[in-house]
Image (tube, rainbow, N blue to C red; front, side, top):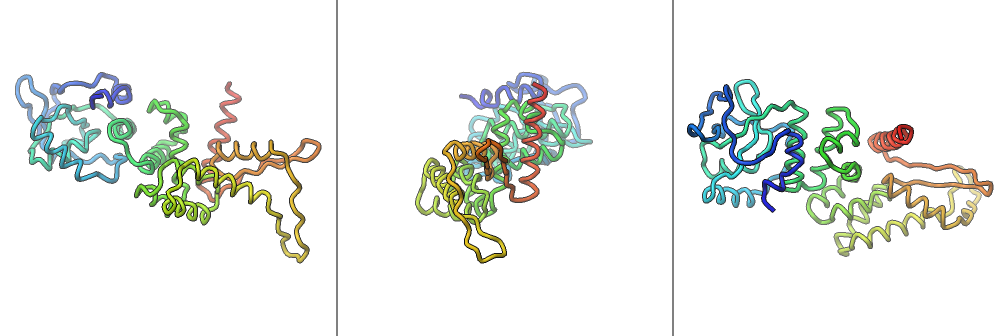
Length: 316
């Protein structure tokens, strides 16, 4: 599959026009440091007149890959122009930072560009989509880019998913990874554990437990399925343990045995919400659902998800 096809529908939808070929300079598009390559050539801009994209989701670039791309540019040239927008008398990068870095490393004084009209919000969206479709970010970079967007523009996960043409669950599952302890996040960045491992740790809800299981994954080489099973066993064990009596010496009574349907329901809630959930029911069928949260950020996530689900139910 070609790079252009991988870039695909996401960017075309955002730009409102097909992507392909080298662009032609629009009337009045030239600025300081920019000049056409010829009567029929694309607009070329000095690499030093293109500012970085402040909405770039990627924080780490593989220098080996940049070196390889620079070698490719020397041999084959740049097959697709870099996307930029005008900011006063300069240009700002919208998409194509890897290609721009490679061009600079290859010693190119200028690069072919396509100038587009894009406000800050659209620039952020294009940067996210380009990185998702062209060269995968690591899971935490994706999550951070989604969260920054939601905070900057005050929109819901559903709206962002619609604008980027993604599943809402993709966005929600990634953002939940930011709730994990920093130790676990670092293991995810380094590749010691996978995004699947990290998601499997979320239902524990207890940071020391999450860190301990993360270490076991690295040391024992546990599969995602194995971690999911261990986490479920740990949750069941915690549910079956007797409750402590606060402020007294009287031993606690063991918790009354519960039917397997309640345990199954709890696991469904935990999987859906990504946090510990307790379901309590008496013999008359009455009861309560307790949703645990570890801090303000997780509370806000749960509030947005639960209230958003209720709004969708009423609208339907």
